[in-house]
Image (cartoon, rainbow, N blue to C red; front, side, top):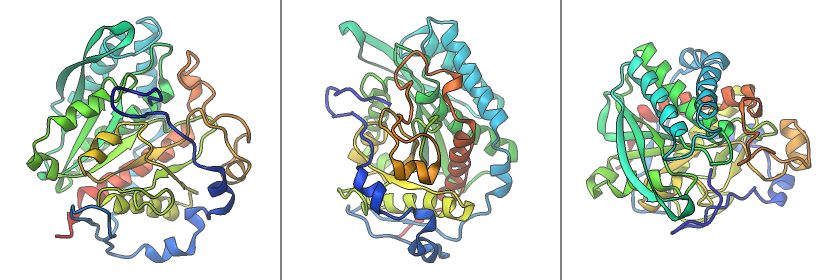
Length: 360
């Protein structure tokens, strides 16, 4: 997750405001959430784009059962090895990034996908251009309704980036592998995307979105962002797609994405709170193009409040991730239980949005 101002956007990730934590109800316990878990729901958005029509929630239990700590850890171990063999990091344009990409591509090909590299260059460290790439791989669903699952593959130059963002990469990759192994092909196309250049300025996702024609952008039903989803002192947060907590103009359909995640967490008995779209990760390019967006987050350099510690456990006053953008962001910096919880939610949302339509 990037935090420095870039060429176009402010990208410092902010923690949610303390008054919300102290006063707002946790969604899993809120009566209105239970009442909203109906067979079909379309929310009203703030743009001219059609909303997303979600029918009866799919039974994702069997597929979620296949998403376990062992598979997720195997991905994290491979990314740690890539960093260890290449100067201790996986930054864009380095051998660590290439080794990380090779592992992701190998696992995707082994699962039956045909991953493609999208090459681009961007401004980088010490005023030099960096040559790098995204990786995308698709299921065989309807391309006119594409659901993108995205996580940035690069780390900062100061460390291996196993929580930031090996955790998101592991979740997206494990969903891709388990979906293929099950033989499940959702009606809508699922695109798995691994972004380069995020830590230098959200360049990979921006390159992807800028390359879409207007027609192709309209064919994107939803974007789900996974960035830092295994924080060791973390919280379970869902991006505020309907604007009820943080406001702002959001693409119509973003509220439905938030609802899919919240309904899942409610049914699973997992407490979840809202987090703001503040421009700090790869969802921003999709929002700018009016593509419905959402995702999950467990916290970065902000500190856990007393109410959060009471709700989620952990240590109040300590940072969500004390190794954020540091060399200690290693395998030991990821909470495996939290990561599995978030990967389970991603699998459920993938199935739900993989069957969704539009309300036009």
